[in-house]
Amino acid sequence: MTTNMNTQQPDDELQHWRSSVQDYISRKDDINLYIAAQNLNRLAPADPLGLFGLAKAQRHRGELEPAYFNITQARQRSAEPVEGMLLLEAQLSQQLNQHAVAADRYAELIALNPLEPGYVTARAEALRLSGHTEEADKELRKGRDFFQYDQTLHDSGVEAAVATAEKDAININQKPAYLTAEAAKNALEILRKPEPLESVRTASAHLRERYENLQTAAEYALKRHFVWREWWQMIIIGLFLLFLIPFEYGVLHGAVAGILETPTFTEIFGTVFAVLVLLGIPLLLGFIFFFPKGYKISRSKARKAGVLLSR
Image 1 (cartoon, helix red, strand yellow):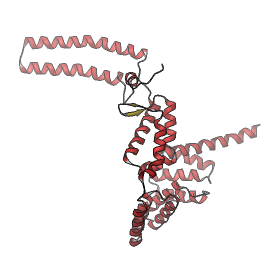
Image 2 (cartoon, rainbow, N blue to C red; image 1 turned 30 degrees about the vertical axis):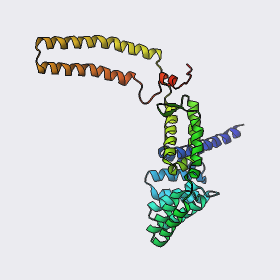
Image 3 (cartoon, one colour; image 1 turned 120 degrees about the horizontal axis):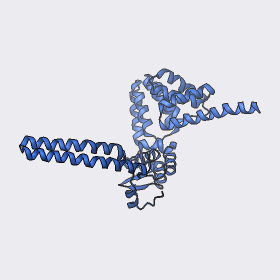
């Protein structure tokens, strides 16, 4: 019994760190990725995912040579070519001025994903920097001829993901919004799949905008949901107004008395300025502490959009 429990615990820990590395890679969270990848490498030194994650994090930290070593090790231990690993090795090779190696990696990327125009351009640049100018020009010409394809075909993967994510969204002020955390979570899972995430960079401008708006709305909905006042908020606001009204009356009464006593331009201007400042400060504090921060969805806007809200 004890042996089974001891065996299960390392397996659970290994799975936890593998999932964390995959999650941080998809979210481009290089700070947490560094910690997660180190833990995964400690438990499974031969796991290519841990080495890949560590290399990405090290590149973000400026540790280029260790990152290059780790990504080459990850590629050697990977059972099949992985586009992300090849791309990272190509980028690191360029940063380390190994342009011939970068050109070779981009050639592998083109063979793996011929519909990515950025790989052709990057390979041509690597060839030019390594001294193969004629071959670079030939690569660019070949790329221009090849990429005269229908942009709609290229956008199809992103379009499908965006359309699916839009099903659970509502439209408020010409922007998408999610009313439940579950809908937002499902949308983010769809939008962060490898195909739309990697293709959105070269998608049409209007499609990129739709994608970014949906991603922003989903991330926002997971942090903050609808705005409605709780009973304790109403009490605080009521007390705030109760003390603000007498204060306003005192300020205005004193200001009017001062103007009536000495009605000069300086007195009038100074009094008006003082009134604006004295009234503006508490009002500003009220907005800061009691008004919803950020772009929130009010219940009235949601009702106008035809959404039935549950308490």
